[in-house]
Amino acid sequence: MTTAEEAFLQQILQDRDGLFRETSKLKSQLAGYENFESERASYEQQIGQKDATIARLKQQVEMLQRRIWGKSSERHINEDPQQRRLDFEGLDLLPEEKELATSAKEEIEQYKTIRVPVKEKTHPVRKPLPESLPREECHIYPDFPGLDKWTELEPEVTEVLERDPARWFVRKIIRHKYVLKDKGLDVEKQIVTAPMPLLPIAKSYAGATLLADITIDKYVNHLPFYRQIQMFQQQGITISPATINGWFQGVADLMRPTYFRLKEIVLGSDYIQSDETTIPIINDEKHKTIKGYIWMVRAVMRDLVFFHYDHGSRAQKVALQLFKDYQGVIQTDGYAVYDMYENKKGVLPIGCWAHSRRRFEEALKEDKSKATYALEQIGLLYDVERRADLENLSFEERADLRTRLSYPIMVAFEKWMANEYPKVLPKGRIGQAIRYTYGIYHKLTRYHLDGRLKMDNNLAENAVRPIALGRKNWLFCGNHEAAENAAIMYSMLGCCKASGVNFREWLVFFLNNVHNYDNDYSKDLAELLPHNFKPQN
Image 1 (cartoon, rainbow, N blue to C red):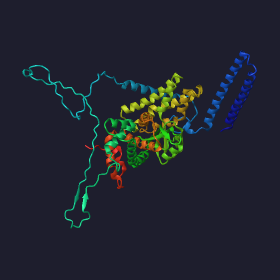
Image 2: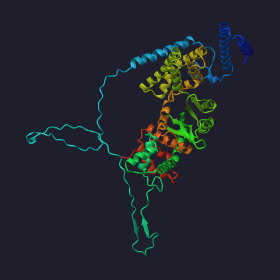
Image 3: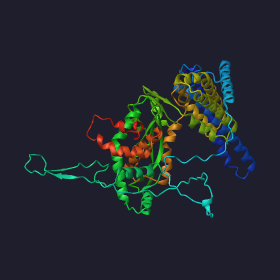
Image 4: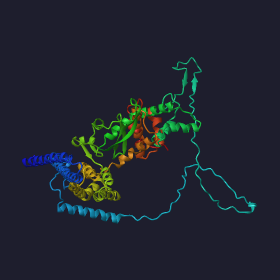
């Protein structure tokens, strides 16, 4: 910091201190004029002016401190998209910058006009019922005398979809035994019995299909176990809650090693997205529901996802342990825990434009003009991505398009925020939206560096949506162990959804084959993961 800057900062602090003392003096004088309303109003007006001046000076001090001591990553992105060294001088757009931004905007809007498809009006058409469903014919003849004198034409056929209740059955395993007829033969065993097939859960009468159904009904269809038990009773089957919970614990234990293998694969990729969501937990000590957090990590290019639960914590120590060996791009929202990866070698944090856009949408009612302008600029960036999708561009071509069209808009938008922030209330919604976006702008703009990178975390948020739906139905997890089991289930079933795999088919396959990996360590548990599942014909 130069001598001139130090003197300027010292002068501002002295002025602020003098104004504070003067305001305190006025307040003490005003106390003696309680019966003179006009004088009181005059003094209150002076105090209000002084407070506004103090707030303005305080904002100037904060801006000066950011300018002098702020990290370079918080300053302006460079006008050259190939240079990520950041500067701060010159809040106004240069004529060349303005020309680039205007040209990019015109090209984006022109492309939108050309590519807007004309939707033809269509009438709803009933889709035919699947041919794979069995048909039961029901013949109805006219109630008309003398049909033998008539010639029958092609009948009118109407198909109606019907449904039978769930079918329960018992699979009786009969193991045949044989005894040696000639006792004089030298054999190891006199009696041989067919081996017992491996059941998913030892010493349990629950088959793979039943275990799959109760798991899917809870974690896909969001039906708590007690509701499933009620449904079973209506079908004449009685199963106790303790038995159901024991079965679920057994399924979670079977999945745990494969879950850890999934975690290794996801964290071994070079581009992940991370998010957190709440999950209610029963606290055994306080005997009440508390808010816990479950972490979601998604491998973007492989479309794999896993959930991580660590005693409901959202603290920095969880992230340190979770991502301690990770190398690559990590895309998150503005949660401060991820800031530490800004300085970690081999890790490139990028931001989420959807979170920023949401802040400006919330500010529309407070400052429509500024919020609308910000949303328009963000919308232009998304228009570039839609164009890249429509033209099916390669990653390299997408990165080039972003450099040519998106980057000039990002440069102009950042300098607009720097100009507008001193004019708004810092604690207002528009002030918070600008501060949030400006504070992580270096992360938000990095997606242009690689055509693989996404603008936002929306796909990650879609992955955590089942948890939000589930907690509205089953309300809470009974303890930390139950929450860990839920994380395993959501991980596996989330991978099924991402890969387009039938939940039930995969889960039945997993339960019937997982024991083949118990003692054969040459096999890779990744073979059991949903994205590697091939349905049996």
